[in-house]
Length: 349
Image 1 (tube, one colour):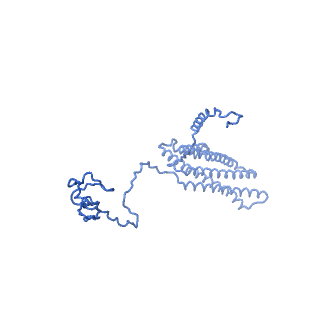
Image 2 (tube, rainbow, N blue to C red; image 1 turned 120 degrees about the vertical axis):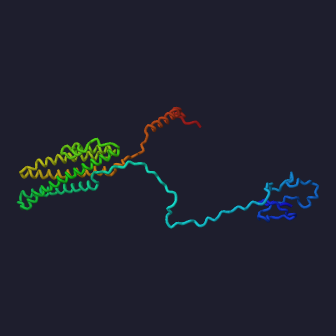
Image 3 (cartoon, rainbow, N blue to C red; image 1 turned 120 degrees about the horizontal axis):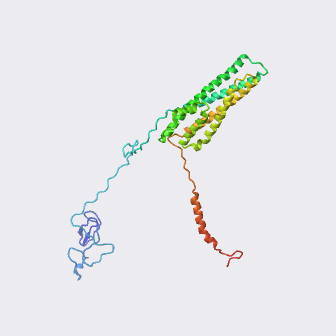
């Protein structure tokens, strides 16, 4: 009786005793394939030697397999243990490094104008000086009212008179300093804005300085230069209103300041009092003009020149909606034209 190992394929002659395990590889032995005991005395002829008998039916669950001659193949080697999971006290520095080639960007030219802190400090100092000058003239006007019935002390009268003059002179110098600083900032900002768009400023530097620093000329040209800058930086929609309001207040402040200077040479008490009130209002209007100019300045400085402000919003396409509604209306018109039931009659049962 022959039993074949299912693992190594070795054929074992187990004689008349059925075995389960292979002596070589300890694999499972298949069912016996040899003739049963006493079969050699039967009249059924045996098959050819060395091969399975022809036409012999196998038990259920078994099939004939081809086994190569020779020794059994070596057993497969199992996987080696991977070992413990590696742990690191610090982040490893080895591994694949990502190198991204940065696009060649145009190096922005350094701005040569005054810094943000310098412009802001100059404007705030000028506004403080204008406020103090207005307060000094308010005190002077109060002393003029008191002087109508009471004779003032010489020291008080001297301080009231020359205090207003000193405050006015300091205010004039601070206003000129603010105008110069703002002009330098405007020139540098325009140069940076046009350079960002790879263009040259169409207006020369001397024209910008003359249009911003020459009295009465700057009333018309300085706002134009600022509007051109806002248009180049694509911020005219946001800065148009602050620029126009600053322009109007600055115009009224200049006109009122010129009127107060023209009426400051009067000698009668009522004229002096009226000029003092006019000067107070002129200083307050100048203070308001500087506040609005600082608002325009900060409106530009909130966004760098290299990062233009663009806002993308979703806009509804009315043409597509109208076309879709027209198509639906054309499809529903034939259905609506056919009357399902007659008016004034009940539906049929």
